[in-house]
Length: 218
Length: 61
Image 1 (spheres, rainbow over the protein chains, first blue to last red):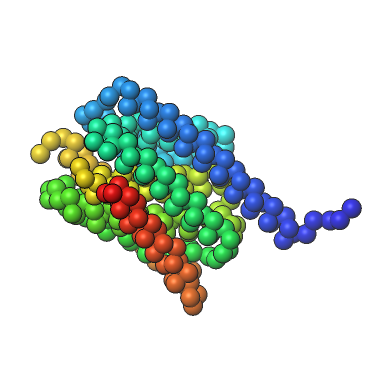
Image 2: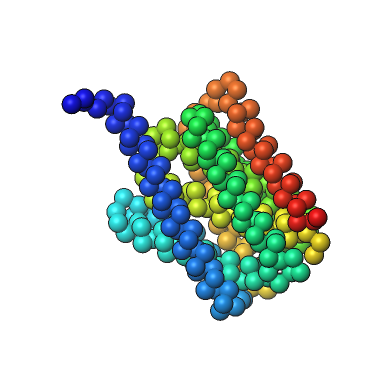
């Protein structure tokens, strides 16, 4: 019987992390869709969506890293993604209320899926290390948050288009970087890997929805 | 200004405060880009930009 070399073991381990990440990502996206539908049916409003989003981000930043190496991490990631799904319910109701709302929402959904699959396939097949982009991507996110802060007071749709376009480009960069880190063995925890990928997909979806909503005839 | 906007503004400031140390750490520790690495990253991101433009045209049509 042939023995397995250390290099082959490393490849097997990487493939396992990648497979587990995509499985957990599918499950969390499905769960988010369910909680989004639930919040759409409840027609919640006011500060609840924002509080849910802030709660999910606090859990993601401070609780998930501490639980990611245990089975509790799975519960935490489902809680986070469920809360994020619940938070976008009112926004989806608003877009579906437009005359071509269902077209806008379905286009954003399909577009997000195509962007994620395309970028992941590119990162997996090219096997290039994209982690050199980390500083630029985080610096870009800080700039975007400053612009978002300014737009609270300015309330300009044109400004929102620039912000959303920038977020989609930055999240595309994060997908390349996160996938390449899994493929090259830099990320070995599939729960943390899933959280990074989920956030990229979530942000691409809501910002694509914003762009398509503004640019559609409504 | 309503409370939602105030809460959103505070949240954004908190995000910035959390990200700045991470940004400084990445700037210090991130690996250097190899020759041609930026173009291999910009190619798919450029593709995403073109794809989004196509999606915009599809909802306008």
